[in-house]
Amino acid sequence: MRLIFAGTPVFAAHALQALVDAGHQVLAVLCQPDRPSGRGHKLVAGPVKALALQLGLPVLQPHSLRQPDIQTRLAALQADVWVVAAYGLLLPAEILAQPPFGCLNIHGSLLPRWRGAAPIQRAILAGDAETGVDIMQMEVGLDTGPVLLEGRLPISLNDTGTSVHDRLARLGAELIVHALSDLPAHLARARAQPEDGVLYAAKLRKEEAQIDWTLPADHLQRLIRAFDPVPGARFAWQGQQIRVAMPRTEPTMAVPSGEAAGQTLVAPGTVIAVDDSLAIATGEGILHLHRLQRPGGRMLPAREFLQAVPLHPGDRLE
Image (cartoon, rainbow, N blue to C red):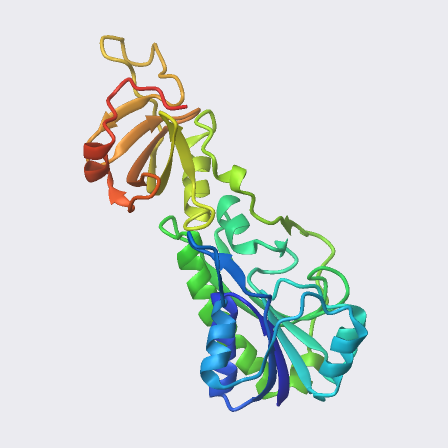
């Protein structure tokens, strides 16, 4: 098919490569403008743009799709369909109406649960047992259109935002190729989303990743997994922001030395033990941190980290 592809990050790059490999004619690739990155704040191309240039595909990076000139330019390409994956810009009604087969979105959740910007992280944070990818016909509403195809994947206790993202990216690439293999038939069988069960996956905020030790250990474990690697869960210690990864929980609270078991609970944020993990009391249960990172340093196993940042049983984290 003759298509226009719109996407920016790695999640979308998987789909673009799969569409090219399947023999579809990509008339143009739309990406968000390059962003400053690193200490030098140099402008860096996103993964989709880098791949498109490698493949010799024309790249467009408009700041908006609402200007008549860019709409006219895109209409002149006479695409059969648009494929959109984590593009980051809204498609106005004028764009949605251009291609004969409409605009398809590769969405990383099981709609209508987790419409919006961060479905992968929100699913992990909520403790969902499974997630998936929906190929959806786009409408003016946010992720409200009918679903053509759906693929499901379990979420394990070892999954992080990274691992779920990578599996969904591969699944999304497979599903969009399948959808385009017989698009009229899939459009004819598309199902409307139910009105019940709608949740919105709000964009991630950096402050959400700050650990609050008064929360239950199970919740903090999900938070650390969901926000790995971005924005990265962290806690404060002596003026430093310490990033954490690879958590594990235990259901019972530790008891201070010399106290009878079950009589005195440790205050949330108290270091319980230091060894192959950093064990910390929470509002409910104990959280074991197996990998930690100082500002400007590398993510290290707990034992190595504690050699550089001494923490001892009884220390109280902020």
